[in-house]
Length: 561
Ligand code: TEU
Ligand code: CA
Image (cartoon, rainbow, N blue to C red):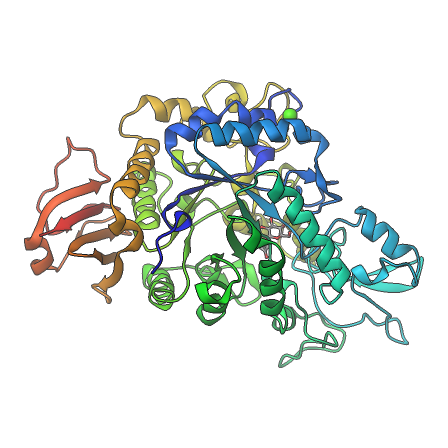
């Protein structure tokens, strides 16, 4: 396995709208990020992934781009962006930009042209279809943000495809001119010194020819269906990625990660095997779907360690020799990991550190989402109006306003799974609005900010922050954390995830207790071989009762002799 920077790196994701406001308009911005660079440097991360900062009407907070080569007014200017890049580079941190090229905004000049007439040269940049003779939609696909994936455009009487909101029309990758225009745009940023690209839903760019309707058992006529099987990991996606690699990526030294909902291990090998020249790694979603029942993410169902471990183990083994994993438990689309997989009440700090241990000791590249490093938690806003996310509002309208569903139950699902859990402003200190803004924040703060904030974390040597700092610095010293082979232990244990990492005679044992009661580790041989504890999440003043017992949410990383 080749040794390279991007395998050794730790990435920190910034959601700019919620990171730091610098001018009191309540919206985070580039100058705000610039003012916090020393904080990121102190944490020790190698790469910053910036969620989209391009011009956008913000129907989906920047994931709807109206100009790929300029900066969103609320976030600042290209000059600010250059300064941010320089500031990162001065601290030895690389910059990974978000690349959203499955769709654009409907306010992008290409779409404005495209919709203007059927024979406009840009018509074919998007996916247009006529409706049926009785006003039927072109097919039965539903949008990922609720409702049909098709919108009728009065001007030409045809429908355009939008897998996400109606303000996010899908680009037509079948069109070579479109692809060339996108590659040119990518070169624009790479020429400016961008070091990496995170590619939004990049496995959705190739749709099955003819855009067939989905057929499921029991589907009523006219009823919408997902349709994912016709656009996820589609027929030409690898051809496109190899072309993109040839035309752009291969000409630069660039780190790449593709966001790929619905990708299997087999798909991921095709995307990331080094000899295929596509991407370096992907974000797989299997473990993010772990608490979703039939009908999708809002049907919240319980998860357990067995399920989580089965998924992570499968990916560890599956990509061990071909491909590379990205390691994450939350991001701007997901609930906070300590609330979802740990315990955000009496074991908030301990369980946040335990989950961090998992992310930094599995094989792959760890991604930290802003606030994770201080153990930020989910929110439970009482009013629907407190939420800003288009996914939440569209879902609520479909289920409750139009569908007659139960308000309380839906609000509960939003509390568990809503994307705004991750998007409440970064908690810097205990002053009003947590030091995020001097104005009115665009999204309310999590009321726990007086207790959970950066200032508090920096003042407490046992904080989650310093634990992350230590994990990151350990990674720099111990290649076994990056390149070591992974091997599962105690495959049947209900609450303990145990494994080893081994590299050239160096062997580490990792023990993680996923529950709030003590658990016995039945690994006599390994425990006898322990020569040193490298890191553990309980304070030193609280020594373990005995070495076979893991305390609630305890994590231990030990060297074996
Ligand atoms: O997300 C793609 C995606 O399918 C999901 O993560 C989705 O947002 C969520 O799980 C729906 O339940 C990417 C971006 O990360 C997300 O913020 C954007 O809204 C979306 O693409 C469209 O660009
Ligand atoms: Ca601002």
